[in-house]
Image 1: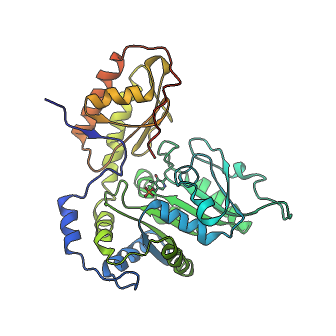
Image 2 (image 1 turned 30 degrees about the horizontal axis):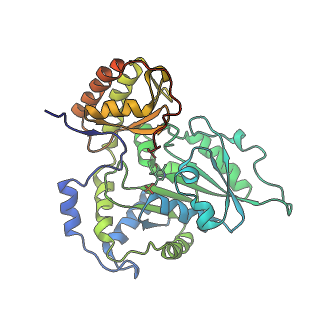
Image 3 (image 1 turned 30 degrees about the vertical axis):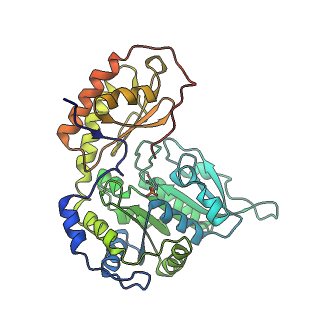
Length: 363
Ligand SMILES: *Cc1c(COP(=O)(O)O)cnc(C)c1O
């Protein structure tokens, strides 16, 4: 009999639970372009409160939320400072260039984490040769950095410096609630240092659709207009927002279980020859790991795991990512760990084949 599928490719694969569907079915809705959808209005108020901001805006995706933020903070020709492996720069199809006509200046961190010294000399002098440095974007938790929590002290130093120099600040908090649950630091304590903050409901929080951008009321009014331009004005969007509302009411604290389950899988990887956790410490629900070339490629390992029902995503020639979420319980995490321990050491050792690069996925 085929083993059950345990899908660790992403925390975006979660499906609405019966209780969430029930809540969605009962949601009161109206035209949100006219600001009349009570479910969206209620969600937006709750998110603003959760993040300690005057207002928030429900949008279709984390990408839209980030790109609206870039747009409202910049003018064409401005420059955005961000971390080299961040989502805004790597995984949003060139949005800053396409939609806002800005340059990104990537700064390399350590597993996505930056500190103030990394920003030394990064503000361009006022001179007609140079772009205007305008915006700093950080990401917490940092996806490509291995689900690392951006330390609050670093955030305080970087955003304090940014403010001193008249730069706007935006937090890509797609998984901010994971950071908050992992550290016990309320989301509001992270959020208060940024002008705008984006959070995703469709990742670990388990809603089917949507993100929100929170910030000062005046800025969110402008964000609404940009959302309209980007084609993101929704009518009875409460049908989707109800899932998000349910998610923030029920699914925040349980992220702890995802983090515990991630430890179970991380331990199996740690103890398996030929695999190496990178970063070595798993802090939240994302587990990034390297396949030693002697063992084969990441795609080959992913294929073998798949043959035993465990799906992981390929993030590079030797890079894999596993991700725990609402639809993976403890027994499933334990089973996935067992499959890793069994399957990987039994792969026949092969010489490295760097040319065998699979299509890269895993955002
Ligand atoms: C997933 C993600 C986003 C947004 O993704 P969408 O698929 O557009 O919702 C933004 N930032 C980070 C760090 C992410 O992981």
